[in-house]
Length: 118
Image (cartoon, rainbow, N blue to C red):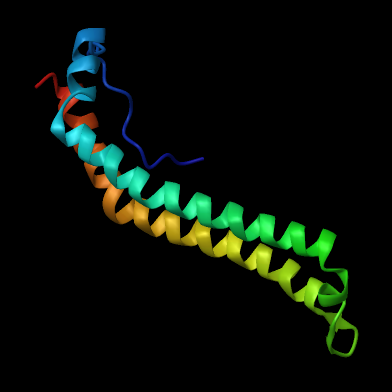
């Protein structure tokens, strides 16, 4: 079994103090990271929950509409149910792209600065 990672360093690494964590948490850079995350995640979460609740409410109270046959044995309920799964995977893919492009570089910069003791 080959390892691509270098062996662990022999030097003892000191962890940041609670005061340093608080200082970073109150920094503008961390605030921007948090804002970037929230501006993406919160609206998408609210939108998905609304979409899911619409599906549940239609299933409970609009049986005639949901039972409408589109083609063969495929009805509106089936199509909307499959759309729920597709939406879930699309949101996960979209978030991973957003995180890789916007969140991870900012978080890595903060982490590197904290670990270097700067």
